[in-house]
Image (cartoon, helix red, strand yellow):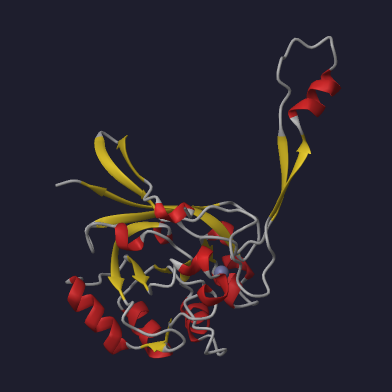
Length: 254
Ligand SMILES: [Zn+2]
């Protein structure tokens, strides 16, 4: 069973309310597919429990020792947010540690674009059809998640997963940002289809200084198309161009 077959939903009591938290993020692990050319993840034992117990010696009554692992990874591994600095070398002041909470925690909506084939552009007409079907009206300050349907291939067929998804064209991504969105998320490895190496999303998001979030899971498991929140938490990597995130859809039952 892949990690994403299990819908990770928990009810958490928070600020006096019972809230549903649905995990929208993948694990970070050596096995997960990475964007072509990006660095893979490696874990190793830096010190095992046995080693530290040996170092502490017989004078220590601590019975277990402590284990510590090393990590090498990429700032764009797994489910992650792209900082504006990722898109434009002149925007080092907009690195991942500078992203504001308003771009990470916001009212959200999700739409289903899985009717668009892989390796083609998602157009404004496609967006309007999906928004209409979901009965969603975009408002300034929102985060939009869109589902392409590619995610189930992530672990079963990584080459397909990394090459056969659609991406917003320049007009569509511009139109979305004109609605005042603060962040856009997708289950695909990029907002830009690999069939278009002009990277219209990365270009427009550089100019408009808007972040986006890639490689989400469980988008279709959110039981309503709007009237929920998305909250994501990148690590505070100083000066880097992205970070893996813990990310949740959050809603209160009616
Ligand atoms: Zn990225």
